[in-house]
Length: 181
Image (tube, rainbow, N blue to C red; front, side, top):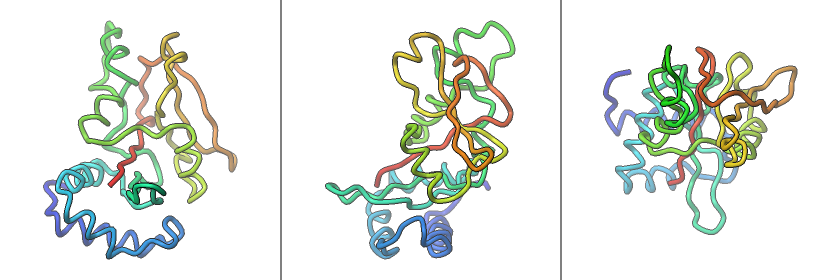
């Protein structure tokens, strides 16, 4: 996609927002846009989410703070964020055939958080995502301490949570991020 002007990004986000009202009932675009225009850091993160194929959209609002939740809503795991192992520890542990990077580090660099299992399930209530791909999710420390990491997908009309070695990577596995603005 190359560089994306903030006004072009806002126009893209506005079209996506209008085209998917089920994802954000009771939220008005004007309020979202005003929040974004006052937050250049969030705009930069959304540019990166869009550039890597995430198709970010508003999926809700935090009760106390009023922050909006932007999540990757691409039908499949974002194409520009695949073939990554889980985290730096896993990347460093690979002796050969290392992937280009890790999901945790890529998310941090973008300014997003990996979805939790609960967050992933909430996203799946808004549509059918990852029917051909899968996405790493934030892995609990006890699972990670044993060398594993968790990922999810949707198959047979259900959401599945699986485990794999954190150092594994596949061309169909990426990650979805969430941004609070």
